[in-house]
Every structure is written in structure tokens, then in C-alpha cells.
Length: 335
Image (cartoon, rainbow, N blue to C red; front, top):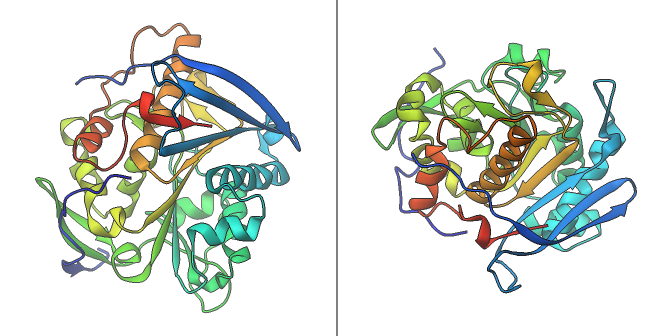
């Protein structure tokens, strides 16, 4: 992933708790490979790419059995996580795959999205990620699942824990003031002070202000004052993700796309929701969000909503321009 210029570093004062659109591109050479009920959709080359292997890889894994009658199948979700990490790292062995991305000595923060159920970061997906981290030798008490509020975490089925035993799970307690472009944000000390690495587990939704809300916008739950970042169609979400604690520590993104919502978001609108039954994973947040936005746009077209996503997705375009990752589908290897 391309390096971004420094945008604030990790310094900051500790604060108490207190238009253009993304274009679709045609992919050629599509095949589906089944493995234990998991479907891997392989795009062997993008239009005009000449079949050259891309450096930026984004993995899509789908399993029709991941959800039934509104309930997520925990085993299927776990298998999809394993399949995604295996494809992403090229390692079939679970331990080797996770060790490719994480060290046993690290403390890992998992940023979930528990707002606006049921299109959220599903607990069953996160459980699969926790299992993978533990397989890499990471002690479970060095894993911190967090979001903006305890109430929303509990409502989504997460078990709160701030003890010295077991996987920790709680809302951010303290914050550090930092500058994200023109916006002063209060960033969680889980990121600035505690975590060595981040796993970003966003929801898969349309957003009436930002166009889409996937991995980069998921970090509005990492700040105490998220409303400040809704200005200018949320374009400064890119600047938030350029801050060192997020940019340098993000190791993995796993979009919990078992359910998706292609319009009317972020609040739940059943008419726009559907069972995508999949995960979208990668290490480049711009590339992951670009692919996810493309999938949301495709679903909008299936529903008869013409044209690109509205409103325009400014924060992804800005992030690509800042060098935070790859925002051109023709340069992303989608597997």
C-alpha cells in the first residue's frame, strides 16, 4: 500500500471521556470455486490490465449458508474468515496465515461497527477473527474489541469485559486530541496508546451523506466527536485515516458483509437490505472500500437504481489522492 504523508503523528493532548463518483469496471475471466461451502469469486484480470497480477489484493468470499432465516451461521462465518485470510496471505494453514499478518507479542484492537443493526459487524465473524489471532499465539487478553458505546456493543451480542482475563471488549474510555485535515478530532487511546495493530471490521452499507460507510468511515466510531467529520460529505474521513495511529497500525480489514444495505443508510431500511452472505477482506482500506462500493452499486442497479452511488463517495476519492491506497478498480486484484 502506498505511503501517505504524515498527518498528525501520535502526539496529542489526552481528553477524558466526557464529486465525482466511483465508476464500475467490467471484470473478465470470472470463475467460482467451491471449498467447504465457501465460494471464492476469482476475477483473473481486469479490463485493459493485460492479465498482469496486481499488487493490491482484495478478497471476496461468499457462502450462501452463512445466514438463514435472519440468523448467522457461526461455523460458516468462521470458515469464511479462514478462507479469506488464506486467500489473502497465500497460506492455507490457519496458524501460518495469521502469523503472516500478526506477531504473538502484539496487542490487537478490533474495531467493530455495532450501530444500526442488523447490518453491523456480526459477532460470529469477529469470533472467527479472534480464533485466528489466538492461533497466531496472541494471548486473548491482548485482544481488544471496541466501538463507540458499551450499550451498542451489548445490544449487538458482544460480552463486555475490561478485566485481566479473556478477550477484552468495551467502548473507548479516553481520547487524544488530534488534527485530521481541518477537523480537530478526539481519537480513542485504544488506538493511540494501547494497540500495536488494528483489525477493522466494518459493516457494509450505503450512507446518505458519505455515499457508503465501510472501513474508513468505520473509524468515526474511534472518535469522541464523529459529527464533526460529517461535513463536506464526510470527505475528511480520509484525513482521519491518514493519522499515524490508524494508517500505520491497520493490518487487516474484514468487511462483515453477511448482510448489506444499498440505499437509505446508515439507519436500517429493510427495503434496501439484502443477504450478501459474504466477507470482503484486504490490507488496503482504500482498495477494500472501492471494491465494497462497487458491490453496493451493483446491488443498487439490480434494484433499478440507475447511475453511480449517490451522494458521491468523496472520502474514498480523497484517500486515493492522498496516497492512502489504491482507488482504481483496474489496479486491484479482486479474488
